Image 1 (cartoon, rainbow, N blue to C red):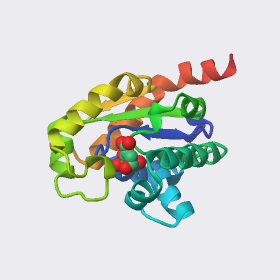
Image 2 (spheres, helix red, strand yellow):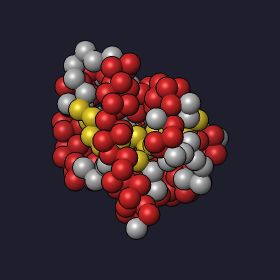
Image 3 (cartoon, rainbow, N blue to C red):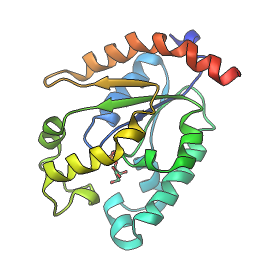
Image 4 (cartoon, rainbow, N blue to C red):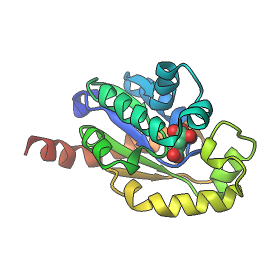
Length: 184
Ligand code: S3P
């Protein structure tokens, strides 16, 4: 698989609660790749939590940090990058995402709601009707996520290992067109 990827980065995109970080770590391990998480890097650079960045500096500032971190991460090779759910909203971010293979981890609102029901760390979900907010946000973002090279639709009860196996099985089916497009 390493030979096939030729060092191409993998970017995991998808809604909050889609499992990008959990799957990303496991996938990186299987590929012998480095793992990076844009949200963790943002927290490190800002020296505060995402929740505090949103509360104290606002979403626009968070998005500018997110863009900066992605631009830096894109200069690496052999890296699996888990991204924040909203990274796909900025068209300039796509310039960086498309230098690698973009994988959309899709999951139903029912699955996302179950995973996020006790979460207090995502500012966009605080004081909201969770299922409603996820439904609306997911619908607003669908056309962006659909620009991914590969879509993985998670099933209820599927394990991280099973999801990663599915990704590993499908990467070779997408890699040739991707590399061809890069060369043109
Ligand atoms: C966001 C998703 C979060 C984080 C921030 C905004 C979003 O990351 O970047 O709270 O706009 O969907 P996760 O997708 O890892 O939860």
